[in-house]
Image (tube, rainbow, N blue to C red):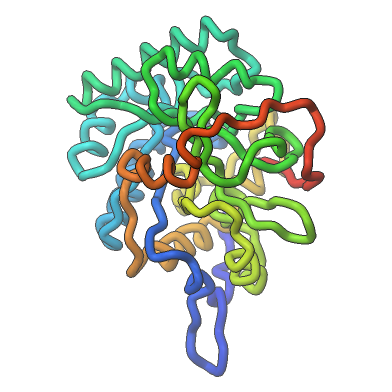
Length: 310
Ligand SMILES: [Zn+2]
């Protein structure tokens, strides 16, 4: 599928203005390294991840790559390369399953194994975990205990908003510590009309109208800002595949506007500092207020944002 190149993100008075100008100087690049849902061959994520590494070389950014255990098993050289090029390797779990599909014991077992495999490949400690689909919700608040027992120091698994698929509106938008001590770094969200809305990754970064981006940036709630994407978000050459499992609409959404993602990530990180999340844990703890426990969900969500987690 050919997707027409859209006009520049923002122009004023004939001069181009970066819509991300008001973001903080330090914004961490993060990526989830997994197979594209629309790539039945599974062969594209290696080259797509390397293009992502090249982009970071361009901007001088060092980031955090949450690698799926299945990818590490099949492409150990890719994991070594990510680490060798200066980035943090963290875990995206063993299989790409939402937490509610696992039991506490199974999560502990799979997360432990994935951590050991990544540590053996990189020779470095693996301290971070991101749940597939940001699926740490009110229903899976057992997960932090399992992750702490599996040896992780921090999690990046919560979307602190009410969402169509996953989301946990009952937790803070700033970093916080779960009662077990595991540090949580929630997805950065903006407060718009009383609702929390993510904006710096995935479909949001790809489809947000450019005129809305500066407004949302001024309303960002979390003090620790990071972006997130997948290798396939930047794979502008992948042929369109209609994946019958996820349907035509989602297949189209996953494939379209990738040039915009690439352009926005390049503009966002150019001239801005990015260091791995593992190097920002002291900052996160300071925002967490010395490890005050997160409120346990009682089902009374303070938000009512209805957005799809595509
Ligand atoms: Zn994922």
